[in-house]
Image (cartoon, rainbow, N blue to C red; front, side):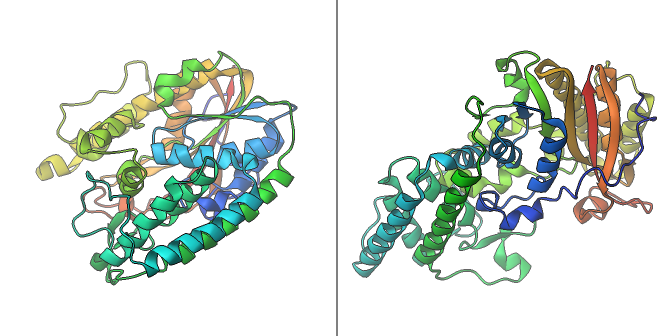
Length: 439
């Protein structure tokens, strides 16, 4: 079936994939995340497409929503993730069944004793703030930083996997008591009218979070289906570089959501986590992550010479759409359409790389479900879901359907930004599930 014939928009096939429903779900709630999809969407997909023992792949694993649901259901989960913090979060969640919840609770009590004593005596922390981490204003106030460093002293003395749970609790909460916040990108609180944080009960919050995580660990150990799966794995590398590490045609189901065509900078928005967890020490580490990213960023693409669409993407509408973006607002120079067209061209070139990797991994007849949102660049609507489906079709996939479980999503930074849009001409943003079958 061609992609045009597949546009049946089956509204009842999948529940709303928005990540917000994960915020109260055991284990999933450990890490807030700006993007991703709900555990309910993944559970629906597993119930429908994973028959018997299955190997399920997520090439853009994020903080592990797919992997956790797959593991809970008794299947084998494989994920790829370039962001070290997100990969750490995914792996720590997958290891939840290996943690003793009673030991976690006892360690929480020891943590309280340690912190109260260290604060009473005004102890000097052994831990130090990351030297390469630079922000426009102090990330933590002196009082908060003193507490954070003492907490890290305690965490660093613990054994794995207890230390990893504490470390993840710290990383997931660290922005709350900083002078920064997400609006939705990371920025100073004072710029959005919020006061800086002079002091905060760091010990109490971390103890509360880890206690909740202990309850979730107990739930996970009780709920997890025991199967004959091999150990689930998270590869901290690009899917493009690592997919051939998976046995060819060994994957039964692919569920993923690649970065959208919205220029959201995941790596920059996790800078505090990457530095404070020790994954980054200098700006060079970030440049390495940017090179691994799906697509590129407009900030990187705008100064480059014309980026051409891969010649094998023989689709006139994709090419014409990118050219329409390129012709927009030439008087704005690098802020006009040429840079955004480069950005879009690189994005769809990486869509091609993605479907080629998926073709390698999936067995014949297997299903791929890709959650993706459309975009509007320089006022030009871009049906990213349909373009991805066409690229997959050119690469040998059958397009089964394009489902639209969410007909409206928030994305004002794309629609209304003077840099990115111009007029949106009444077009809105939606979220789609592209359903493919490996032929």
